[in-house]
Amino acid sequence: MRLVLLGAPGSGKGTQAKQISQKFGLPHISTGDILRQAVKDAIPLGLEARGYMDRGELVPDHLILNLIKERFKSPDAQKGFLLDGFPRTVAQASGLEEMLGQQGMKIDLACSLNVDREELIKRLTSRRICSGCGAIYNLLFQSPQKEGLCDKCGGRLEQRVDDQRQTVENRLEVYLRQTQPLLEFYGSRSLLRDINGNAPPEKVFQDISAILQGK
Ligand code: AMP
Image (tube, protein in one colour):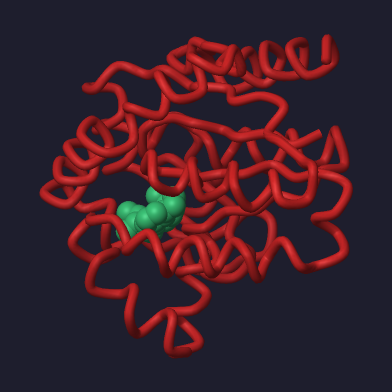
């Protein structure tokens, strides 16, 4: 199964993707995670991408499409995958369609997590990530047992630079302008399923699982 998870920053894509990927045995491909690792490793992709990411802007399409092309070459991506944070523009979605089409493949489903704007801002600005294992916390409704430390590995919890208020507002603008048109892109291909992302994470997971089990 080839699945796309759509939704604004903070809609819960990362949290859901981790669980879906486990339950359905699909590799979780997050362009945001790949880019953050590239920045950490200071490889050319990271050096090019960093400025855009810190400002909350999108990294240029050609860099992202190359990154995905490389990732798809790994054997684990041959039987299916779960895309998180990609595609983010119509050009990326068309590029993906073309890339898969050349191998006689296509996207099976695009699930859109829909969350109200105020809720997104609240979630993003209170999100913390473990610098050790990448676990996601939220100071409002999923705080760690010991302040500032990961329950799973004891790593230090950090706020992403782009989760600060000003950058969050910019990321939401960018989402509306550049990514929201993808709903129409996948809707017109009858691949879109809407999910109420305001619900608690367990309920969202149940709803997505039910859709995937029906496929
Ligand atoms: P995310 O973790 O998905 O919120 O991504 C963090 C940042 O990485 C975004 O704000 C963008 O700067 C960049 N990014 C991630 N995925 C993409 C993509 N598909 N297209 C362009 N930029 C991306």
